[in-house]
Image (tube, rainbow, N blue to C red; front, top):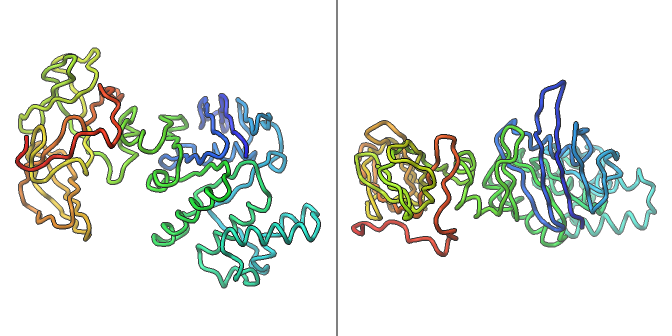
Amino acid sequence: MAELTLRGIEKAYAGLAVLHQIDLNIHSREFVVFVGPSGCGKSTLLRCIAGLESISAGEVRIGGRDVTRLEPAERGVAMVFQSYALYPHMSVYDNIAFGLKMQKEPKAQIDAKVREAARILQLEPLLERKPKALSGGQRQRVAIGRAIVHQPQVFLFDEPLSNLDASLRVQMRIEIAKLHAALQATMVYVTHDQVEAMTLADKIVVLNKGRVEQVGAPLELYHHPCNRFVAGFIGSPQMVFLPVQVLAASAEGVQVSLPGGARLWVPVQAGAVAVGAALTLGLRPEHLAEQGGGDAQFSVTAQVVEHLGGETFTHAMTADGDPVMVKGDGLSRVAAGHSLNVGVVGARCHLFDAEGVALAHLRHYTEGQLPPLPVAGVG
């Protein structure tokens, strides 16, 4: 499998720029996910890699070879689309073999490749069926099989699970992860679903308005987002943001005022932060404790409570009208209208300046190094 390198990629339609100076290194056998909101340019960037869109500036290299001006068939890539695009009158076998037949490969070689792809994707019992006799997940596996037989240097996936229902999405997500492990292939995957990104990727590329916001491993982006956009996009449920004011700043970090007046030290680099400055505090719902505890507490009123069995989502409001979500366990007894004294731990919080840039933590925590979650009665 091959390394994929993008240098200064730009794309414009009739003078309207949609991709801005994209620079990326994707290593051989790496699974990289492009993620971002609708219209951020992730599918356009994937199509530029595939050669389905010409680029306005920059260079695409696959396996060290400059493929910027080559046709899609000459690039050594295979693409799986959101639509299965199967031929309804053909069997599974013929759908997978069709591209190889068009390239006039020997019949025995075609048969060997199709049957190997069917073995990998567990499609062997279905080879004689027509697409109408397949489930959505099976059809998507046929589409992936059609890409596998070409033995590409890079696999490209453009939102391949979008047409599936929730349970099939989970199942196919696992199948794609297994496929990557089996093939040890270089894969680039586009999705708007950050859960797919977190569970599949070796490396995530977060895009926004045609620009790369941050590149990193899933947990790196989760624990150390570089700005408010990434912090709000990575993580489910979404991070809570509260306006706060700086009370003190030192080598120990930044002290801010929580709703209701409580004080909280956040161990971040103060830099040029001044006392009295307005910042934004970022809190993960799963890092809040509905029974208090931690380094500081603030009061909220529950508005809506969602009991999901194994977990509980409490949608609440501060006295100032700022929304807060608290993620608790399935045994939570919170009900709408209840007042909660929510506990927080400073080292699990994030601070963002007026431009949305994150203040760097004094320690580069990993999950195993983070302080424990708030415990009621411990402050």
